[in-house]
Image (cartoon, rainbow, N blue to C red; front, side):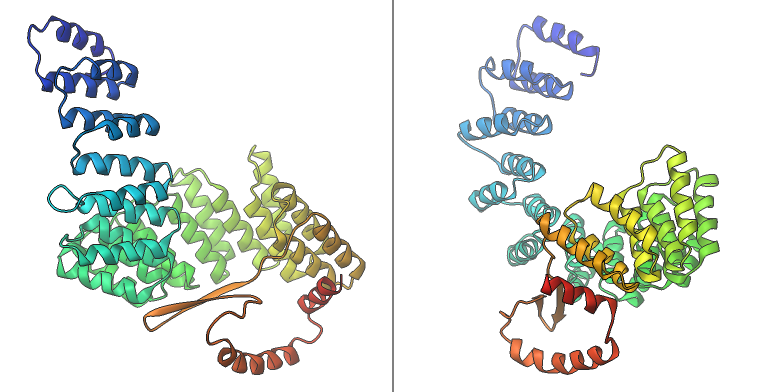
Length: 451
């Protein structure tokens, strides 16, 4: 029942002398597929003996139409529910980003034959990952392993993605081993997730081995391996993989060229970067995005080609494109390295016009002024930063050791091994201070604390 056939279906339905529950359910489903939820609700009140499929159809249709409140009302009125009922309403909450509500329903699901299935677990694991609650996603996956259910390819893909984001190589390797035992490591989705996990965790040897063992590759496979090499500063290897991709039957997409241009930037291949940028537009007919412009401006800026970078921005404007904050940020970073005060001030002004609370912009601009001895400007920038209520964000780092990890925030002394960790760091700090006496950053820091 689609489009103009709705009225015809309604006529046939009205002419039927006898209707069973399947007929009613079909009409309800058809109304939802055509965006007519009011008519679906109207039929629900007319069905003599609605069954569980009727209610499941209502819940699924309401969730897909964005009416989570209506779906929950139907859910609460049901005398009995099956796993499809629970999964539909939980997925609705996850889709809306209401993870706590989804988790509460997940824990309320009955156990046994009518309880959680693989879909229930994967909906919650992927939902937690999407909302950045990675550790909770890992814990839920561990709970799933303790149950009698076997993970499917969607489960492995989601948990490997979480391992990539953390990053957690040890857990990722365990998940890879489990996927091999279940023979799901041969599916292209799991293989792609394995490549990404190994690459983001710094093990490019295993990432390349996994890629090479795949019988077929799609664009995600190529993007993952190229991005991995690019991310770790292995520009020549990234470009070598891209050249192999060009001779395959897989066409590159926008993400491919983000990785390629980034590789050119890290490797200092200015001419190559220009070539691939033009190749993307003229041969692959792909419209450059903010990410591509950021990469090419960063490439120019890294090697002091500030004027060329600014000309590129002028070209963007001439083409009617808005210059994103990422491009101005790349220019600002280049000016910091090459001590270009005039352009740096322009870049900082444009960044702050878009994101006025970005503390790093103030600090970088202050360092640029300090690099040429303009201390009055340094104090002016830091004063303006404090006046606007912008606070410097503490630095953060983390490390994975054995079976656990540790997170460190600048100025935080709560770690249990703090005293033992600080001893060798103090020695290193003295050595660094001796090598960086009079640095621009130290000067800015002293102005910040004395202000």
